[in-house]
Image 1 (cartoon, rainbow, N blue to C red):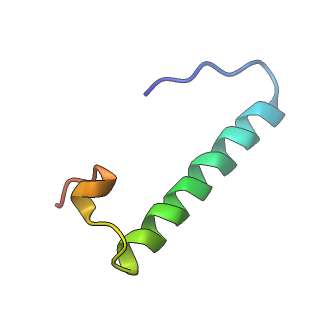
Image 2: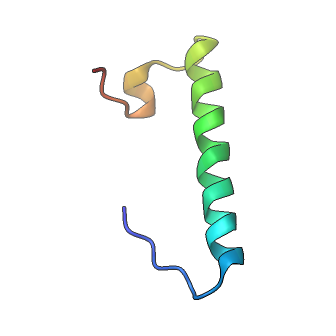
Image 3: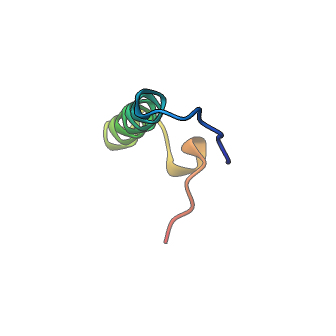
Length: 45
């Protein structure tokens, strides 16, 4: 995935926060058993 962000730190910060939030949600779903790794598109190591 490639994102092109405008010059400026506010857009970068928003993108980082959005990705971190999605990761936190995915981790919660996986740890609580609401989704499998395959459901989330993760590949086990």
